[in-house]
Amino acid sequence: MTATQKKAASSTAGRPAAKNTASVSRAAKATTPTPPESAPMPTTKATGGTPAKKTAAKKAAPKPTEQAAARSAEEVEQIREALTERLGELRADYDKTVADMSELQRDRLTDSAGDDQADTGSKTLEREQEITLANQMRERVLQVEHALERLEAGNYGMCERCGKAIPAARLAVFPSATLCVDCKQLEERR
Image 1 (spheres, helix red, strand yellow):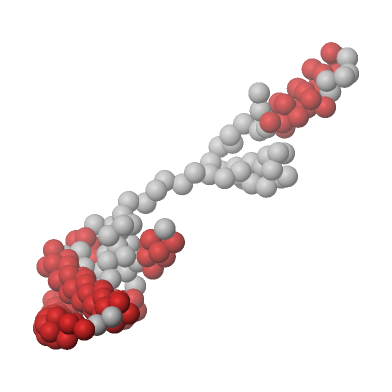
Image 2 (cartoon, one colour; image 1 turned 180 degrees about the horizontal axis):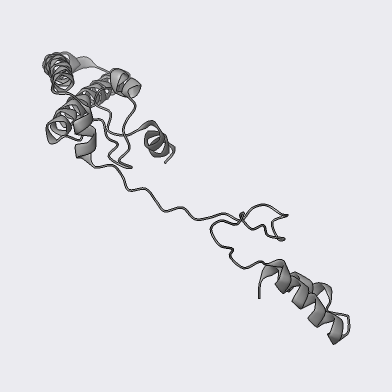
């Protein structure tokens, strides 16, 4: 029984049976059969006369080769050079940070003989912050390496989640982006 039929049946529950069947038949007339393609979209009484929605077929995600074909060899080479340069910078920064952390750790071990608990806590906090910074730098290195792998595979600039092209403006700001703006926003909400 449809919602319209239930509503009609409940509103006529106290009336005689003859009137009750008339209400049900009116409710049945309210829903129209599916018209041919050339006819206008049907409206439903339950939704207040709004057009009924048609279900659209889902569009298949573009294949990586479509995006790769859109980029010229010169463009790919420019992207590769920029990513390789950025990778070199990030690796140098990471190596320097790790070396500095090792040196600071040696200094802390020799200086900690007469420290009180507050000094020990401060040093531990500083060490944790340095480790976090180094981990973030390492993550950036991995992102750029992954972008280079995607470039070689021919799917650089395509969203890993939905398959849509990542806007050029986003790639210009964040060349190692693997998600389009919409998918990234969904990920950040979780």
